[in-house]
Length: 122
Image 1 (cartoon, helix red, strand yellow):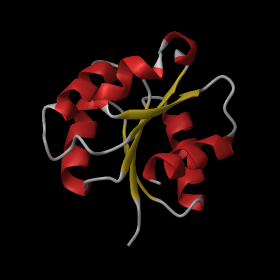
Image 2 (cartoon, one colour; image 1 turned 90 degrees about the horizontal axis):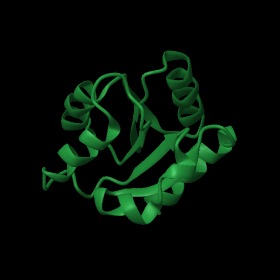
Image 3 (cartoon, one colour; image 1 turned 60 degrees about the horizontal axis):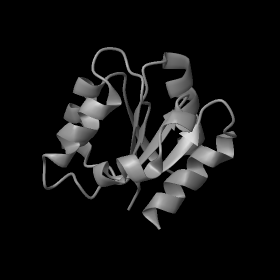
Image 4 (tube, one colour; image 1 turned 30 degrees about the horizontal axis):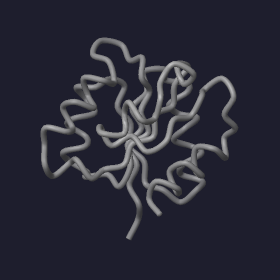
């Protein structure tokens, strides 16, 4: 069975970069550029993990996190935040939303993405 990961990122270049890295790691990937599109994809594919940017065009990731927590069947999906705000977000403050890891876009290495996804699925 292939592990499915949804990438929610509004920067098209960065999203494609993440998708390439995850595919090389053996993951089946899906992309949403905004929170509303992410809900539809998540409902359709039931991913094993979500890689989520915080600052999205339109609705923020926090609104998406809240929406995911209102659906009992989606609350178990582990979430990895990939954000430029990593130094301003404490894991303890977002763990109740299913966030298991926070990656800092400014300092992360491509291998950090697959390592984080693998880590939240372990």
